[in-house]
Length: 376
Ligand code: MG
Ligand code: ZN
Image 1 (tube, rainbow, N blue to C red):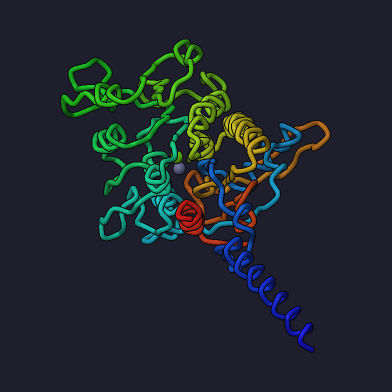
Image 2: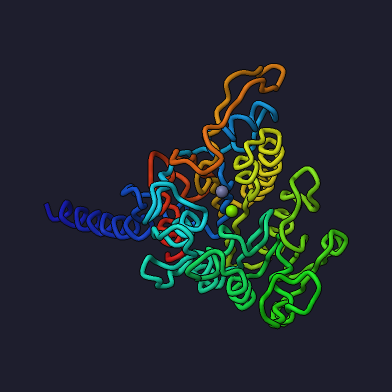
């Protein structure tokens, strides 16, 4: 009897130790499920945003490319995209939702409907000692990238957006938009004042303007690359291409042992759809999917990396009516509008914390979840 009690006590001790260990090593996911800590919280986050990229845009890309990098993702779902004040969102409100976890009015850049600044996932990442980057195929002052590092009432306030980008903590910035960073008196400037924001950027990072300088970049911790005065050209003519920029950004950011947050935007998928031009959409989709491939390749060799791919909204009401899978050709397609639509957008997730991104969610779930991951 006495022996049994001693044995029971012994086991009771083991059980307590096991329970404490289990609770401390597990945590609740945003979807209410439990997952092991080591598999939940990513050290690195790469968020790909295909501006205007709906299911048909992806379908078209797959028909032409054959196999997409997107097909390697384990989890996928759909996001609703309406904004605080509109049935159909714009890129500013949608990017704010994904960057901060909060809805706002169309045109607002990471400020609430009451004009209060909303802290972004990139700002949380910086606070946690991580490096941060933005890689886009438009001007860096456009709505999507600026929502990650600036807080302004209207997306049209480009001068102010450029000022806030220049004084942000961003470590890698690739895109166009040089014109908003040089004083008014400099030829080609789009500024209304004499502020020299290139000088501000140069205080803490290398600033380059050409493909040659990009190719010669050595081992560095931070860089801004302006590859166009305003917007870079279409994918067909764009240099460097989005995958090259993505690879370089990852190479630089991953030098930080505390991890990084990187947002990569396929900016012109939206413009192609606004113009109702299928070939333009296809070229942008292939460039974007190749960039996703660069992100995935890194994540496959670095298991602490979460890769997300989604869109801010669908553009064009794009539909594919006829074609051939074997011949990789679309023979008939159409658009219902030259504007954005209310269609839900897909989201794909790979890596630690990816299982949360399945099913139907609102776009604010992206910001809320990424910020929660960074808080751990
Ligand atoms: Mg955009
Ligand atoms: Zn648009």
